[in-house]
Structures are given as C-alpha cells and as structure tokens.
Amino acid sequence: MNRLVIVYDISDNKIRTSLCKILERVCLRLQESVFIFQENDGECKILFHDIHTFYMRYKKKGNIQIGIFTVCEKCFKAAKFYGENFLLFDKTVIF
Figure 1 (cartoon, helix red, strand yellow):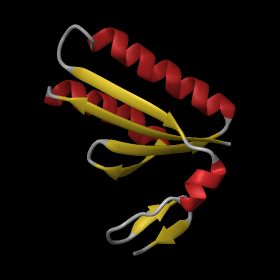
Figure 2 (spheres, one colour):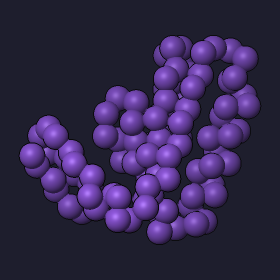
Figure 3 (cartoon, rainbow, N blue to C red):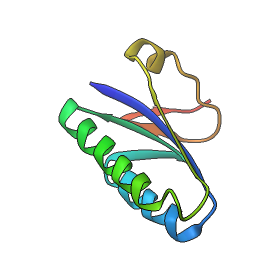
Figure 4 (spheres, rainbow, N blue to C red):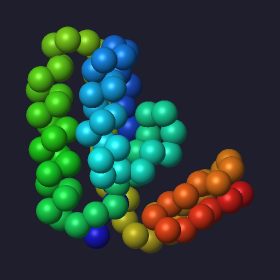
C-alpha cells in the first residue's frame, strides 16, 4: 500500500484547478494545497504519470512547485492531525 502526501504551490488559478482535478480523482484533500494518496502500486504509477504530464505541460506557464512525500505505515499511523473532523480513509480523527 502506497501512502503519499502531495503538496503544491501554484500561483495561476487555471493551472492550479487543473492539478486539483487530477488529485481529487484519487486523493483525499487535507487542506487547500495538501492531499493524501493511499492506493496500490498500479494507481500510484498512474498518479505519478499524471502529475509528471501535468508538470511538463505547464512548467513554463507559471510558478509551479509540487512536492510528493512517501509516508510509511508506521509514520502514517503515528501522525497527529489537529483541527476538526479530519476524515482519513475510513478513520475519523478529531483532536
């Protein structure tokens, strides 16, 4: 099982919306520019391909920064979420 945290900083609204549509298909949004992905290797490869294709298409059209971090299961389970009603993959966490 792959767990990724995907963060981005994109100044152009149209370009940012395009990336959000890609991420919202298979990821859970934590904050405006932070998503969590949890799926199998096949879905992970598709997501990496889609993000790479997006970046190559738009990299010269604006300031685009995308970070993808792998999170092991132990670290994911140990993560703390502060705020109200975080829903993480069938597990509600409220602090």
